[in-house]
Length: 232
Image 1 (cartoon, one colour):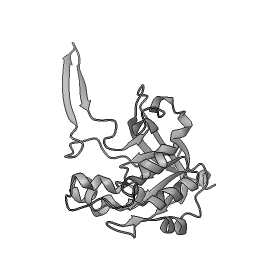
Image 2 (cartoon, helix red, strand yellow):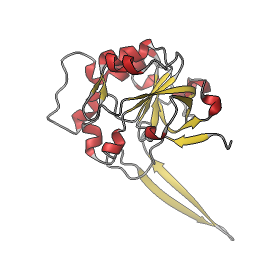
Image 3 (cartoon, one colour):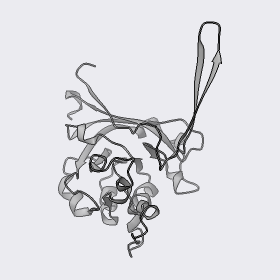
């Protein structure tokens, strides 16, 4: 284990204006100690989480029906951090930077959005880069099994926080990842962080959900694992 480098890619579950979690501690006294229990109320799509296909399709596969190997395996990262704010991540951009990606990978798209604008700020959500429609189609063509993002990947998320932003004319351009990837069974890992700490192009990724019966998504603890044996 000493040769492995484990990198936590998950947002902390804490007070947040967008996710509005509720925390309540309860206590039960025993003769020699006190039980403390915390009740947490969040949605299955708050903080770092994974979407199941049933998130956007009533008859889609739910999180508990997906095999465990769906949520772990060989991974690669595409560095997009130089693009900055409000950039469309297009097919050409991804094609130029994805030669190391292999079919079956879990692909991480690195924007460093959280370094420019912390997730607690509205700018994180309103100035984010986004994946264009042709960019999502290109990711689908790579035959990856999941895509993970350290930024709000679909342009439509800014509509709720910036009234000056208008939808783009092409149908699907504003929610390309949900429309193109998730509908085709490519899972989405949303609102991850610390991609800048990954030093290898290829590594292992673990992002297991809770076993929520009929769940359309789940909070996760996502981890990248680097080491000599992962350089395959």
